[in-house]
Length: 371
Image (cartoon, rainbow, N blue to C red; front, side, top):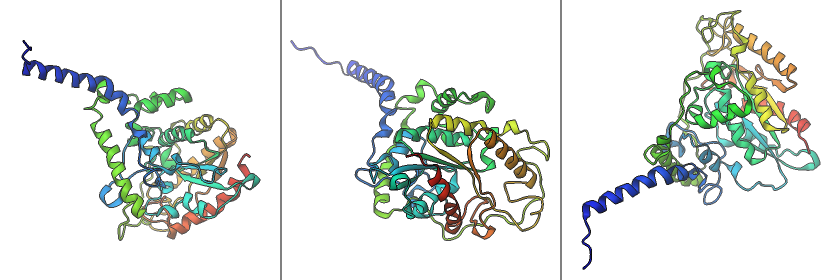
């Protein structure tokens, strides 16, 4: 006589099995699922890392899975031409290209020039900039990018990326605590010097329940990839925008520091050398990016919305001394772009502003490439 199946016992066993799968298998799967992608296969790789606050208009979205971000980028595709020098460009939203089409960004305009390096080999530039101001965010992306064999790295930054209290506030950094912790250990940096209570994820965060947002975002990125492949649109371009302020406040503090009191040890200069160390011999060019120099109200006291003159001047002096002591390839283009070529912030420029910068960079890029 056959045993009668007890439905309650069957349901209990099914639930236990599902729980085991969730606790054991899903963490392993979710840690690598980001590498599965339709980009560079069914649809073209993106020109820049995925980022958007308006996904339905931009065919793009912000997510924090580094594997998925790089898998969607053209850098993870087949290198074309095969003998090309790969030049990676790191930076903030000005490098990523807020209000700029992909071909108008620094990487896009440098690629348009069809430059060649030693032995006549072509140069291929990759836009690995990402919005938010934090050197640690840049270092995290630099570390991830090394898997794609760069021949040169160009790292653009501005003062607002340097204060210690900005290092761990980028959402990309906050949502990758274990990667950041490993990064700091390898680089010899002290995580606690930037934030005492940097939150770490738990095992439960890696379960199916904890990973539901991550998995959903990865899926959405694939779906938006279809529209990206058809339209080439990866950003929402509003019909108009509020221009960067030219008339400025008379406040002179910067991150609660007063003139003559800015502690240089609270500027994360050491992250620059950590990046050069991580790159292990790959030539790196460090660039202080252009800023808006206002000519409006209180412009004698402030350069722009971000910077009192005293703070920015002290920063430039410190950066110049540090780069000289560390023997960095450092270029200071802070005043290269005229005020009329800035758009909605004091660091975002028009295509013409980008063109001025690209023209200055070309001879330095060609001079420092290693055959």
